[in-house]
Image 1 (tube, rainbow, N blue to C red):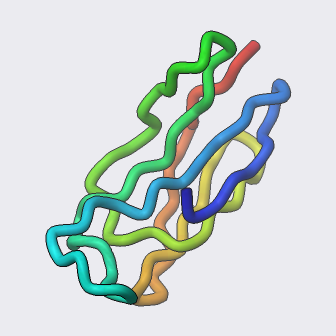
Image 2: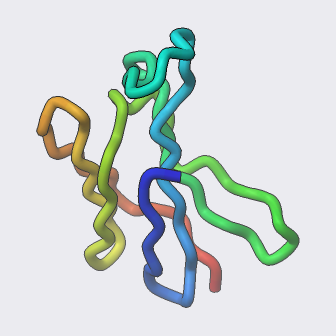
Image 3: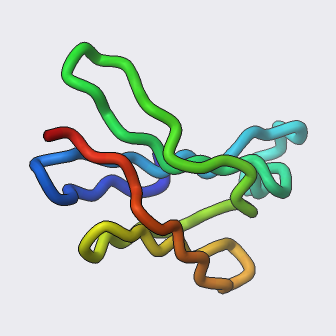
Length: 84
C-alpha cells in the first residue's frame, strides 16, 4: 500500500500503487494500474476506483477522495463508499 487513510464512518482505505511488469528495484508501477480500496470488517476489500495512473497519495474530504499520481496530477473520486 502506498497510503492508508481513515474516512467517514470509521472507514479505512488503502491505496495500492499498481502492478509491476518490471522487477528492477525503484521501477514505478505500470501505468493505469493503481486502486484505492475500502477495508471491510471481514478482511476483504471493496474496490473504490480502478485504472488510476500510479497513485502515490490519498486524502479523504467529506464523501470524496483525492489521489495524487506519480506525475503530480490530482484526481477526484466522488462519493466513495464507506462502512456505516
